[in-house]
Length: 180
Image (cartoon, rainbow, N blue to C red; front, side, top):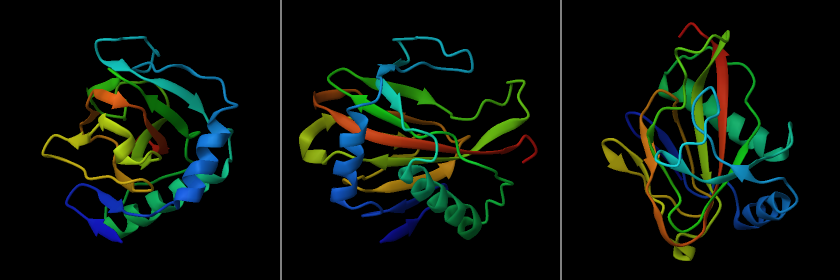
């Protein structure tokens, strides 16, 4: 099921439970680090507490998320010039983990590319954790296991603090030239 909203696109069952399990198994062998913020990759516990690791470049989930981003870009009429996606970030939000309000693009950085489209996939069953709600400024987004959302990277969003269990997710960004 695909749902389009003013600012984002949402697909339930974009990835099957079996594929979510495979991705979580793949995650176990990757090096986990503390999630940072900003272009300078700063540890900032007042803004973000998350454990992350990176799927290898060209991992199968990268192409899945990239294709959903391309579909949303065309169907929503965003019209972003886009190129390749970044490596997929696999996040683990355990108790008291969160990522407060932020945008994924970095308009002031000095690179020639800019994050244009963000794609988030929920890997956990919502029954396995409490809190950890993905929200845009105007509303929370209902996500079940395997739900994927795509949105312009300049939209402010957050993940509220997890109060029980662990919330696993995958995030991918599709970059493009700095011109919008």
